Image 1 (spheres, helix red, strand yellow):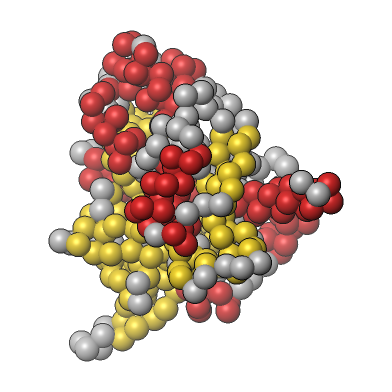
Image 2 (cartoon, one colour):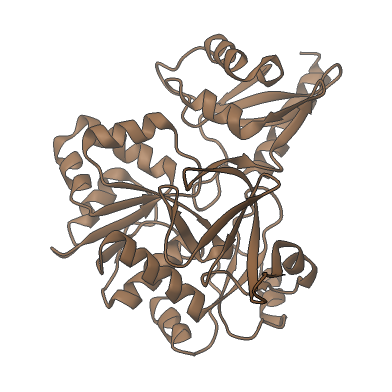
Length: 380
C-alpha cells in the first residue's frame, strides 16, 4: 500500500484500498467506473450514517492536506499508523510520511493500548505523531492513568491527533491532566482528512456556516464521488464571488457554529428527530450522556413512539461503576428538555462499530429494531 500510494502521488496509477472482506462486485464497480481526471486515490467512506460512497482525491489534494498538517504540528516527523489504511485517517498517515520523507511504523492490526505503546518504542528520536479515534484514545488514557510508564510513553508523542467523532470535555480534561499533547482534528474523506485543528483551519482551508451547516473550501477538497455526478453536484457547490473569482465549497452535513473564529461542530443535521413537535439533536443527547461515569460509549437513536412520534433511546457498552440510567435520564431532561430525555437504554458488551471505530449506526438501528420486534412477540 505504501509503495503504491507513493507511485500514485507521483502520477502513477490510482489506488483503491479496501478491506479484505469487501464484496468483489463492489471493487469491480469502482474499478469499472470512470474516474474524475487527476484522481490518485479512491476511498470508500465508512458509511457510518448511511450508504458508503466512493470519494476520488487528487494527488494535489492529498499533498496539500499533508503539508498543512505537518506545518501545523511543527514539522516533519514519524507516524505510528494506528488506523486502517482503507480509511482516509489511515491513508493520511502514509501520505504525511511520504511528504516528510520518513518511514511509518505500523501498530498491530488489532488495537491494544499496551501493544500500541510498545510499538511506539520503534519510532526514531525525532518528532513522533499518531492519529486515533476517541474509543482508542479513551483506552490509552485508561491505561496511562494506572501505569506510569504508559503515561510517559504517551507524553513522548509530539502530537496525538484525535478525530472521527466528537470528544467529551471529560476526555479532554483527562488528557490535559496527564500532559498528553492532544490535538482535536475535524475533517472527512471529502476534505482529504483533518482540515480544522482545535477549531481553527489549517493550510488554505476556509470555513463558513450557511443555514446552520458547516461548509468547507480549500485545496484539499476531493474531486467528487465516483459514478455519482448528482451527489457530487449536491455536496460540492461552485460559487462566483463579487470579484468574479470562483470558489468551490463542500457541504458537510454537519451542524456548527463559528464563535470568535473557532469552529464548534454541534452534530449532524440529519441526526435530528421530532419528538412531540420538538426538534431533538441525537448528537447533543449523546454528548450529555457521555459526561457521566461509564457512559463514554453511549449512542443515541430515535425510535417510533405511539404518542410522541419519536423518542430517544440509548445504547451503551456495559462498564463497572457506571452511573444509573435514571441519573443520566434526569440530567439530560434538565439540560435539554423533556423531549430529549431517553425512554429506554440497552446495555451490551460491544456496540457494533466500523473499521475506524465509529458506531455503526445502520447496524445499531437494525439490531434495536430486532430487539423491539422480539419484545412485541413475547409480550414483554
